[in-house]
Every structure is written in structure tokens, then in C-alpha cells.
Length: 502
Image (cartoon, rainbow, N blue to C red; front, side):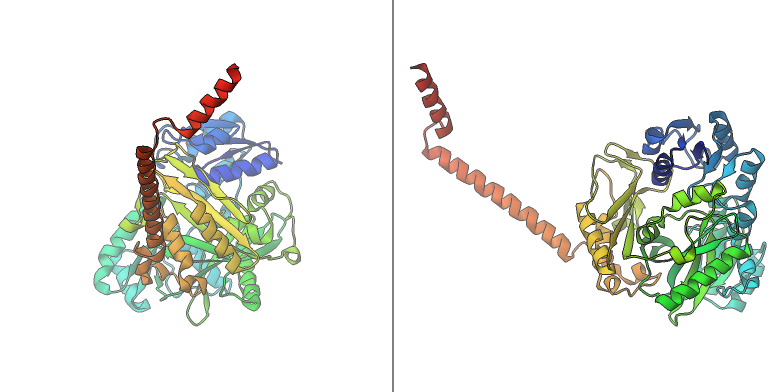
């Protein structure tokens, strides 16, 4: 087992990995930018190494700097978290060259699945159903427009080198294609250093369902059930849950078999996620494979009782999987809400700044994975996530009820945030009924209205409190004008003092 692991990431995921390493009695090393000098992961790690600069391009995406830091502090492994270097083949290879274990899959799997164009081709060859589209290594605007017409509008432009909603553009009509293609290329280049994009047929109102897989270096592959991630905005997940309310036992078995088939096709050897789209007819299509830990991994941990970070570290160390497929049990239901420093009322505008007050929820079935604290300043340079709040219940209804209770307890001061938006989502009748699709937020503009019952109730409570305060103040004034200047408390005290002198 490793003695010291460097975490090439920041925020809540770095804190999550540090906690796991502490459980395993492994030393942790944090890296931090100028902006993250006072971050929680820096405070909690056993060691911390400074990366000069503020932006991700200057710091967390600088693989050579991170490798130098790992060698300087004697780390024998690097955990990339998610994002940043987690799916970069070259970084994985460089780790191997330097004799440092990359806590993730082998470079071949990262290369095959990290490039979305290659992943589609590999999955088609393995017999995995894929969304209709094309696999082009590189395509120019003219050729892309021709292919889009063949596929038929609407189409989705996607970054070949990444995911997470970056470099994605929906194009409904031909006259929108040129500007969308340029925007997708530009965003892909900025996010992944690779401007290549590809095309897929856009499925109207699909559900986004993903399957967690785990594979060791001995050739054992299992799945850990599915998650539903249909509640999204700008192709980024907002709420996740496990299991999916749309998946029954038979479909779960089929999706799990397809996901394991996908993992075997690339000789996978870590934890990972195979993502699918389900259309309104119930047909499922391979979307992509994320060769890393997912943001939403806590919901799978809740219902399986397994520690996915620990599993990831043990696999990287060459240990066999701690469970077999027949040992995996799914108990209850879990929901996760991503808490962000952003303003939903103004197009989810980021809200960096000082957190002047913070009171986080707790109690039965509540977990808050966070990287912030009261007095922490949310920087402008990175994703403005505050925490991942997740709950567990014996049923979907109980896990939702606990999430509503937890969100009601969550108090954040000094910055805008999306807690109230999550409450409106969870209380929506369609969400509670499980009637979900990836356009859910766009289809329900009432989610952005503050003129709802909850808001009116809050106003009424505040008004009642003000009236009660004024009534009490008025009574006190009236009482003081009719009574002697000395209060009864003072008079009684003086009488007791007088008795004591005799």
C-alpha cells in the first residue's frame, strides 16, 4: 500500500480524498494556488506544496509542476480527483515514467475513453448501442455541416477531449451551425487544450442515466448500480440520485451488463462511470465513459455501503476488488444536490466572495462534502462549488424529505447561492413523481420565481416577528409610563440587601 499520496486537485474532492487517506493511515500532500492558500484542503493535508499562480492553467493543469511536487515530497502516488488532470493520458503516462502511481485507470483506457470520438468507435465495435452520429478524428466546419445535414437537425456538438458540459452546443437549425461550431471549438480548446469536436443526433427530452463500474488489475469487472442525473442546466448536473426511478430490476441488470462490457472492451482497471441516454421510448444509448471518480459518487456510496475512493486507491495499489458482483446490495435511496456560489435569479451568475456566515445541516441520513468554512473567500478562478449535500432514506420519498429538511437547515451568508432553487426543484410535483428529463429546468420556468408559497411564508414569518416586537415594545413603553422609576426587580433586591444589614 502507498505511504504518501499527493492530491492533484482542490476544494471538496481534495478534502474527500484526504479523509479517506487518513482512514487508511496514508499521508496526504495537498497542492495549492495563490488563491487557495487558505483553503480547507491545505489546512487538513499532512503536507502542502505551493503552485505559483491563480488560474487552473497556471497551477492545477500543470502536470510537470505537480510531478515535481510529488517527487520533492516523496509521494509514491498521485490522486487526480475529477476534472483538471484526471483524464489526461499524457499525465498518466508521465506518472508511470517517473515511477509514481497514477490513481486511476491505465493510460490505454484513459486514451480510449477520454477521447469521446474514439470511445464511440470502440463501443460500437464492442456491440454497445451508441447515439446516432459520427466518429471523426478531426473535422472542419464545411465537412461538419455536411454531416449534420445527414444526421438531421437538431444535432449536438461535443468536445472530443472532454466532458462536464464543456464545449457542448445544441444546434436546432442549419443557420445556427457555424457560430455554434466556432463556440464549441473555442470552449473545448480553453477547457481541454484540444479544439476537436464531433456530432451526435440530439435526443429530445432524454433521461441521463449512468452506471458505476469497478475493475481491478486482475481482470475482475463489476457494476455498482445506476444513478439518475437528468436534472441539468447547460449540460451540467444539478441533482443526482440512486437508484433511478425509471429503472427496474430487469433494466438495471441489462445496463450493468452493458457497462461491464464497455469496461472489458478497454481493459479497464479502476472505478469509472459509463453514461447513457434513455429516450422517451425507453431505449438506451452509450453517451461516454468517465475514467475517473464522479462528483456524484456519494449517492452510490450511500446505497451500497462501499467507499469508492478507498476502492480506487486499493485497485491502484494492485489489490483485488473487495467485493464480488453477487455481494453488491442496493439498500434504500439517495439524493445529492450540488451547492454552488451562484445566483439562479440572474442566469446562475457565479457569486465569488467572502462567506460571512455558514451553518451546515446534519442529522440522520445527511452528508455534506464541503471544501469551505465560515470566513472562507470563494475565489473567482475556479468552479464555484461550495459543497455536495447528499441524503439517504429507506425510500425515495424519505431521502427527498430529508434533503428538503437539510436544505432548510443550510444557511450561507455573504454570497448568493442556489439552496432555495434546490428546494423549489425538490418540492416540484413532477420531480417528486420521478417525471424527469435533461430539459426539466428549461421546461419549468416557475422554478426561478420567488413568488411561491415558501417565499410568502418567509415574508409572513418576518412580518409577524416585526409586529410582535413592536407590540412588546409598545407595551413596555406604556408600562413604564404608569409605574415608578424603580422596577420591581430593583426594589426587591434593595429590600433583600436591607434585611442583610440588620
